[in-house]
Image 1 (cartoon, helix red, strand yellow):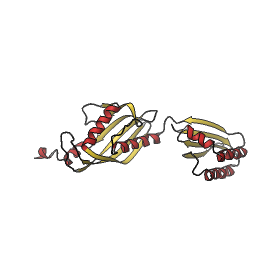
Image 2 (spheres, one colour):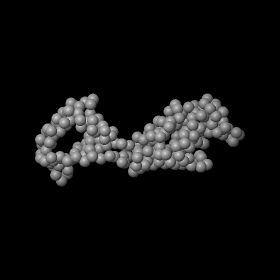
Image 3 (cartoon, helix red, strand yellow):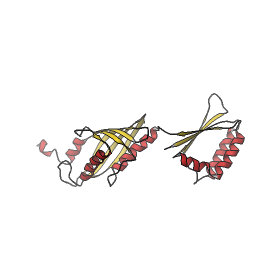
Image 4 (spheres, helix red, strand yellow):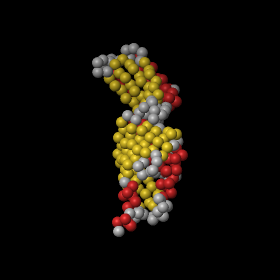
Length: 234
């Protein structure tokens, strides 16, 4: 789980503090575990600063704190503060960018060579809405069967064209490319190279896993590329 530390401090010597942080970054290059560092200044108090440091996990944050360079810089930082800084430790329970990244990893996994386990990406009771199916697909086992049916018919992958995240929802516009290598809906392999576009909305849970999905895609166009509509056009 992503971990964030908030460092609240007051200093009239911010320029010196800023140079100190640059020195810490340089000294810990290749060793520090922080992935994002942001500093904000209070608009109502020019001496009040808040530093937000993000880590992949609490354990990574502790490894970062235990670096000898970190301890030395901390002592110098305290000396530059008007009063003792305070620290707030936070486990991240919601992050829209995290949700978008999870959704992107889902398309990468599904479009991989083998049928993915999906356990780290989808909730156990994941609920899938696909208008092409007679019934919704619910649960990891059912999703794996659905993915396997597509992989039996095609060697395929996804290209993520666009993503928008808001709240617990991620909308992904994608392009699907595949080669018809096996039976699909009663159609034997044709070897044809086909493609289609679509959009998927994912709802993510507090644990970051995808809990629900809604699909819209050009399945009719896909069947036309496979020649399934030829008899209907005659």
